[in-house]
Length: 335
Image 1 (tube, rainbow, N blue to C red):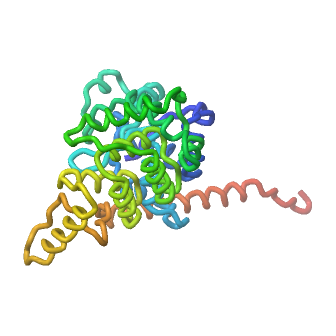
Image 2: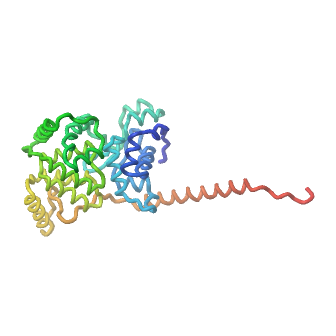
């Protein structure tokens, strides 16, 4: 069902939208703008990258764009807090910023806003403030070393930290708050994973992503974190979120070393060779990760294409009629 939504000219001056354009290009900005009318009255919609792409920007498939472009754009939108791209029970959803959304969509009654009847589940609580503090802690870690200096220069930080030693200690303390014993995080480890992140995802980590990288270094060696990013690069959905899924699977399987990774891979291959054996969900396939795809209803896709073709035809007819109306009528002799 078609929806009409309000936007404001303030979007032209938005620093976050500018950052989105700088990191992902014009397509990402257009995608973000076009998401608004597709969201329900609670600012939510399905968030699977494939469905978002074919629902919001289907014609862009003829311009060389793919669902992977949508996935990368959504990941950056989530990182810079333009929206929340979250997962519930294995399904992806989108939550627009409700403060901005309701500030503009004034026609939605307050009573309806408070009675959450969205068909999509709400996101879990996210402590946005924690990421800002953590980014300050890991900022000073990124200040020493050539690669780390480039990392710090290419990503924003709220304020530099005056002392590097205390920040390393704080980072280790934060990593030790989990169920596993914290690992010692070295400067070279931070530099290696940051460089691999940039090589894999073609951008430097944001402050919140830097914090996540350091948290994973508190659990795994740099080699394992890099291996997870390598496997994300092999997948159709090439995102940091995919790499984190791999790391969580290994964490659940109590992987400690690269030898454990190899053993988990062999266990997975053995389970696949067994007739009718069910694959262990905690083990990641070693040579080809399963893509995060959903089945698109061909009828829905065809209906969307027909709708766009009809709109194009109507636009051409209106243009032809307007051109005909503007053509001056020749004078008749003797008139």
